[in-house]
Image (tube, rainbow, N blue to C red):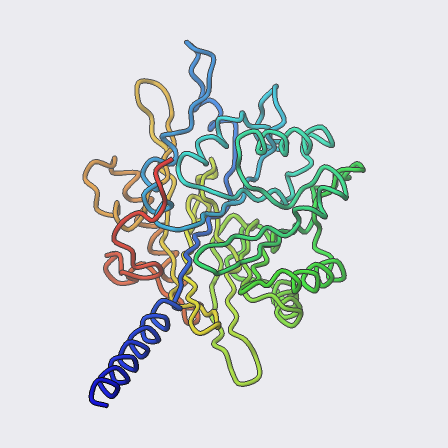
Amino acid sequence: MYKTIIFAILFQWISISVFAQATQDSIAEISLVFMGDIMGHDAQLQSAYNSLTDTYDYKEVFAKVSPLIRQADFAIANLEVTLAGKPYSGYPQFSSPPQLAEACRESGIDVLLNANNHACDRRKDGIIHTIMTLDSLHIKHIGSYLDSADRASRNLLVLSKNGIRVGLLNYTYGTNGIPVTPPTIVNRIDTAQMAKDLRASRHDSLDKRIVILHWGKEYHPLPDSSQKALAGFLFSHGADIIIGSHPHVIQPMKYIPATDSSREHLIVYSLGNFVSNQRTQPRDGGAMFTLQLRKKDGKCFISQKGYSLTWVHKYKQNGKYHFEILPAAAHENNPDLEPAARQKLKAFLKNSRNLLHTYNAGISGNDVQTGKTRKTALNISGAKKNDR
């Protein structure tokens, strides 16, 4: 009898321990980082070109931000050029060498977005060549497609880790008046089609739906009424998170907590430029937006969110210009920067901090007073991705 009681107590204790461990193990996380526009102006082409070897190399562009990119499980950026082959060219009709995409991949970027106003710069062949190049480099991409069958198979990009499934959709307001030649497709901002895509995504057992939009007015620091209206429409049709690009400047960010009658929502109106040759304030920088999702007891929610400001340093060395993306706050008082560059970086930080401190809601990032980086967003001490 005594042994039976002991066994029953032991069994109960083991059951409780297993249940507690299972409950603890049921908490899962996934992290994402979003970047703005990756452009390819003529000065960037010249900077990357090596005349001795007749090759291009963009590695230095991303070297100083690569550790930040690699902290996330998945990194997503807007590729605002075509990879259409030679002759390579900058504005107004971009075609960059494949080495630009290779450098993106090597820096830790997992997904490149193709739905933007420069997607048709080299017409149908440019769309096809861009897709085929990204496929050959094993880089995930969405927004443009070879035909309707290609769109049907990969319009919704699902990123999955630790039992959390996140769906991405990508659309642009237009293609600079250049028509998209069938059968190729570039996703356009069309409320009927986007509502249909969001409905279809309900069959994919997604925890969060992220819509990434190329929208808004260029160089405007605040979203316009059409952006706000479209955001409301998408949230009402199942989008959870909206990330924007195109204005080439940073626009505000807003987090809307869940209520008894609605899910939580988050919107970043514009991340600005990740890299470009646009040098005037405030086009000379942007923001990396980091997001951590947590799933507990079957419910997925945003556990951390925040941004880091970045600035494009263009400098001349040995008679040649170079470009590098800098984590802005970390280099605010860098004595190795030439005085003129440091002054421009400080001006970008001041303007960006003022804008985001004034208009953001529920989202913080770099310290708006001192420039010292806070442990926001991912709060990760080491890289999360495998070396690649």
